[in-house]
Length: 213
Image 1: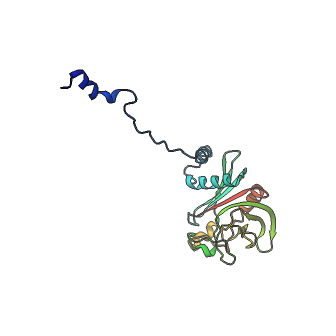
Image 2: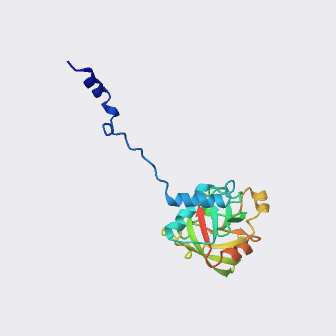
Image 3: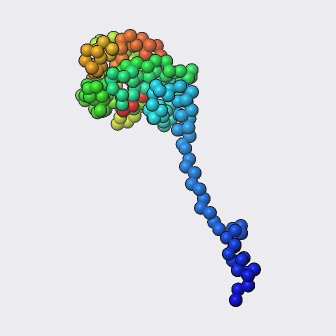
């Protein structure tokens, strides 16, 4: 026969320290990059302008390449060409400088860009991160900017394909009204002729371009 004190001690032994091991809660760590991108996104007041996921994707690529830039242009090709899907951002001043139109390649689609390529002759837009190079004069387009693709297999053929940033008459609200979409390039991120001087001023020789799709 078990005495009552002994029985009680057995029943309540689980309350004693060390007698029961609770499972350790799993704490999911948020990457430092994501936190920093979120903070910068908030400082830039981009909510309602540019999706946070798109900005974070750009930020991660910059960090992966160890690149710091003052002026970053983002072309969000998940939006239709009738949307102002090109964002010119000053990271030092924490300011969205300009939001405007940008064309995609004719091989990428009509209203929406759905196909992307790094291949010569594809006439498609190439995604990824670019370093913006020197100002040049294109025989066909006038003042333009060289683009150096920084991602192997994604946009590294930009120079060989002569993918540049240039102004074009088919990037305008007038063209949209007449055609239901912007005109298309041969793979170049073409902007309006009115916006091109601002691109030259802010992006030449060291700016960054990220094309998202």
